[in-house]
Length: 594
Ligand code: NOJ
Image (tube, rainbow, N blue to C red; front, side, top):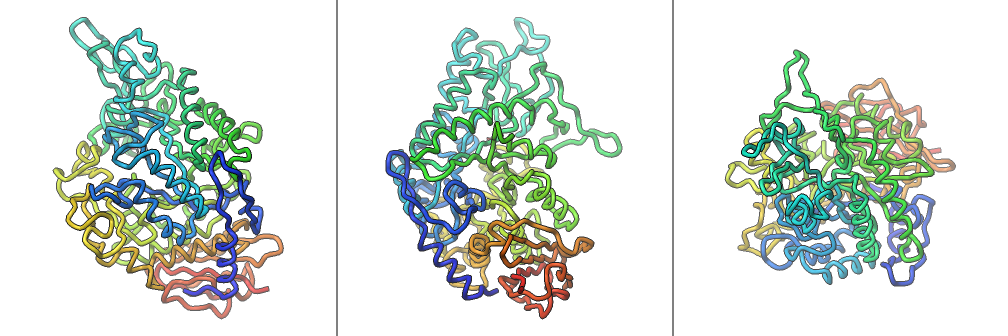
């Protein structure tokens, strides 16, 4: 791979002109930028977001668990990647049943991760490096140890009773709890209803029993979350990622979800042994749009002069199609998310050219010009190797995925460790499983430990994640001796270098920054290719081979010749765009010559 000298200069210039921004309470610094897409107000439009799973990122105090000071100590590394923002999965006080997604206090820091002073320090240090910090906002449910729920379950007359979803069972008698109100299921297995003997009613939980769902029809719940947003916005966060947002509302009539059947009409049984349900009455109900419009309007009032640019709202939006994704942006009058995640593309989980082409094209043509947030990976899914790899060309395939992630139009989000090619490493024995999903679902569903293993910084004992000799909360995968940041930082052919190069291209080549995207060679079922074009700028062509054999593709619709911006390590520079040759799972990116 290589980058033209002129490009290196542009990248360097961008790095050095980036002025730090400041948190609430300080005067805002002005920031000069090269294009509309990178201006402060619109900083998120072509941004690169980096998901950090704090528990597994960097341990600074030798307890085997990552923490905030650990993240702060790695900010220079994050800066060197070229990212614009980090999203931290939950760091609030929590019993850690769902490793932070069961929150018992939304306005504090879990002592496992540090203190509020450590958090403020992280924000200040991140700001100095022009990196925004986004928090995870879990509004669907709390921990059962949250004071709201402790109050709520204490009596039917408690003022917090209707903050949660309590219902009578069916056929209940003085001596029997009867049956749950309906067939709704937890995504983590079995009935979503939990009988609470003290007040003799069931409460609803979309996730673990220890994660009771809040009642979003209660205006007090809405107000409580606005107060929580304000608390963090005032501390200078750059926005939020809204967890499980499509699960906020359920059918008030409590109608049963339908059982999903296979093509022979037989019910599909999931890894937990339950019939698969369609979630028609438990997911993606329209009321969520009102809530998000309200939260966005509220958040916008914090833009002001205390923070340069918009705070950004990201949605965890697994949706069935592009039309549903479009709705998550809201309207011009009532905007909702700036960046609902486009899981349509990243979770195809199969290198099928036609499907990728259609879905990327959908993001270009069916979102009314809104910015897609492309994402392939997170702490809930096996990593890229396990979902897209063929076991032989995994590294090349990871390069293909990264190319789609960064060279497509939109913002990009990736998960810590992907940039070094970390592999999914699931537990091999049930007794080692930490994620309760893996215990309930064993062995069909081994849970999410495999994608949450500690970050591999070096080949030192404990991979530089924690002190030598410490028992880390999840084991360090054996691959750490070769797959690690230190080794890859000095290797021009490493995955880390591939990521850095793509990010720099995305943020410095105008057509890749702001250009519209048009598919090329659309009859090919082996090569996915497209061009990015911006007025007055040279076009850029991108081609990725989705097969294990060499392929040729004709990109001449974009021009006759190109200067190579990036290619697979073993790739060749094409003499003409009519004959672009790609090695197995090879990649080519070129800037079209006038
Ligand atoms: C989605 C989060 O990413 C996942 O880790 C969590 O278990 C569920 N939401 C419930 O909060």
